[in-house]
Length: 244
Ligand SMILES: *Cc1c(COP(=O)(O)O)cnc(C)c1O
Image (cartoon, rainbow, N blue to C red; front, top):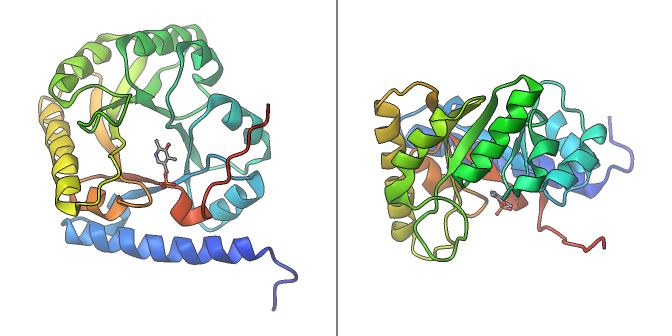
């Protein structure tokens, strides 16, 4: 049966997902793992709920939003049953209260102060909030995240804070023409991840390594990422508009 006047963007999303899933699976296998060992996140910032829901209907079960307000505005229109949502953008301490408990994981914890604020609101809500610790990929380009060298110590300190649980690390890599340079950056982060995991500390699960985006998810997977955050390769180029 032919679909009636379907939005052409639906077909694009389906085709993009097919290609990306294949590439993710291939990279997983090339890195000695199974396709299902790597979790594909659809990054949905600026994407309208109708398209997000279409991706969810195609089997996406993990979405990432950058901004608290945008997520909370779109959430009522999303079919999130059986779907995890993560916050992946920089989080200001004054927005923490609104998002704690509303997402499964806050990926972008980039200061002790932020971790303490999350803890405070998680405690008030009687929950444990899962988080990732953001690591600066080692370039001046990125403003956020801990320096690689200090990350193990900071992770240990954050793990001491109550009502939060460290699930792993997240990183945003610089846009890199040189793929070997990029692989080096990812591998460095992977090594830090493995070292922290090997210590088997309380309250540090280290089961998520979130790195890789539309332009570099294959390199990230080859370097050991098990969660990739892909936006524009699924939904097309983002159109930013200023609502104010
Ligand atoms: C926007 C964004 C992504 C996805 O970027 P694409 O290049 O569109 O795949 C991934 N991670 C973070 C933190 C982002 O802000």
